[in-house]
Image 1 (tube, each protein chain N blue to C red):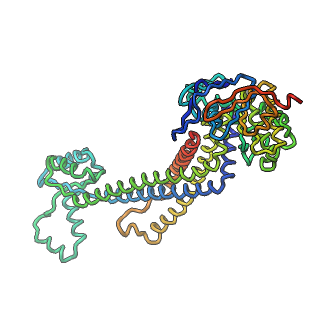
Image 2 (tube, rainbow over the protein chains, first blue to last red; image 1 turned 120 degrees about the vertical axis):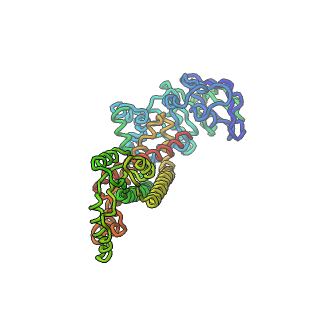
Image 3 (cartoon, rainbow over the protein chains, first blue to last red; image 1 turned 45 degrees about the horizontal axis):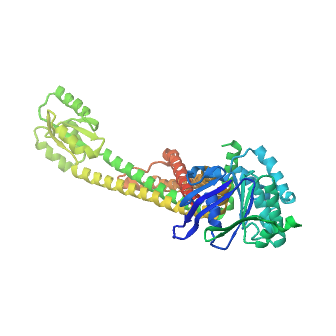
Length: 228
Length: 301
């Protein structure tokens, strides 16, 4: 569960990114966050990941009150969140398997669990045949699926997808969102930030539209895929 | 932390050295040169201290005994001198021995002058040596207060010069060593910062997936320690080779140092273990600290 209670954030430069924002995302929801550049989408993500701390108000994520959280507790919070970025952020000198296993290794997971869990998650994103490949040998869509597998491998409560289709061709974009929908169907909350309105229109669901740090639209719309 | 995770992190440290081999090599070179500079400075300091010490130990203070003192009182004075603080050596020189020594240094013409003396004009005396030349004047005044002491002849000017040289060299070498350590630390943390910067992406991914600070730091720490130990080994080898060459040059064919009245250099065998440990400790501490401080900058970003 993610809750923003009257949250404001002002950068040290004086620029106000969020202005008394009130948003609540329940467990198991799938939410699209849209908005123009400078609307506050990135700040919203940084606040959820506790990269930034709200200058006013309270941010609650997966039961953690981030406004009162000590820095040493941040890794605990992040272990409950999977993050997918537009630029994939894979480690180039590691294979697909190692990139996914990396997320488990850094949280000190047992080797036996890693050996069982990683191939399973790789199979979920359809990359079993490419497990030994390096990121640079994969297409954009495949790299994003590796990033998705890495986000998923810890079995997080929440997945944040920051423009996950930004570097992927249109056909593959739909596959990525399909995958996120499938993950959501298994009980994981998904928050996807996007500029691609065609995807939002196609899949529908809850849409939060931000503008100059405030919510201008927060509704559930029907998608084209439901109509079909 | 699980043993497997620890092994993984150590392996990552070694992998990091290989993947950042250019930076690692640069760090290794900088580290080796820095350690060599500190090592050379310390070795020079040790040798100069030893030379000054050997000059000090040759200093003799003459304690002249009052004329006509009975033999048992002379023995008593010898015991008092031996008990005086800072006195390391006491030897009695009778007036006959002193005359014989003096005559031995004279030509026959000069010796003939002594036939005009009806008796030996030289006094009995004690020759003493002090362990700390900086305390010479205090020791002399203590001895002057003893009974049966006519006068004390000490090399005050020489002592003053020696103390000056020793103090200046101690200050210079301490300052040089401390400055070199600071310079080493700055250079090393800068060069490791480049290595950490090259891996900032990896660090940021680690942070996003919930890695603890120590988990992120350990591979860099291992990397720093390996580079530090390797540099220490190289610096030790180079020091051994160079020092042995210099030692041979000064100690064999022409003992140049003895020409100037100085003792020979300290043999490397006697200090090898200490030099090796010092290099290893400095290498590991400097590079590990440099690495961790550089990593922390990215961790807090």
